[in-house]
Image (cartoon, rainbow, N blue to C red; front, side, top):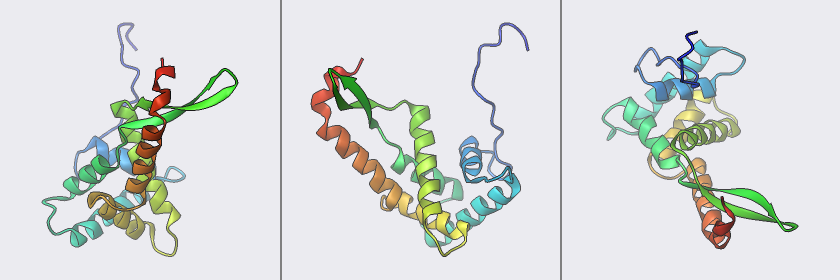
Length: 158
């Protein structure tokens, strides 16, 4: 590797169907035990199901981009110990972390639903997130409420 190489970011290839890095990141989050082809099948099947439930969406990429947009948190709370007490301090969230949290929450809440194939669960969570409802959007709103409730401690942030 050349000495003047500055980037420390891990290179992620775009997914084969859409050529999207965002889709690739979502596929990697769905993947278990290194089975990427299985994760891709689950993701693409979920998008097919979601596009049937959302005829107003122009294309499938719009479904997962808008769903992630609706789940991305703007603020979060971080614990900080000040004088023997722990305070929940609201902080702004960087763009990359917003994206990774949104992806993680959508996949985690899809996994928590039981009794259906993963593609159906992921499709339901994507449709709910697209519409601004669902567990992942609710989670984001709870975090925003917590940050709002604790904004009196914002002066402790560095």
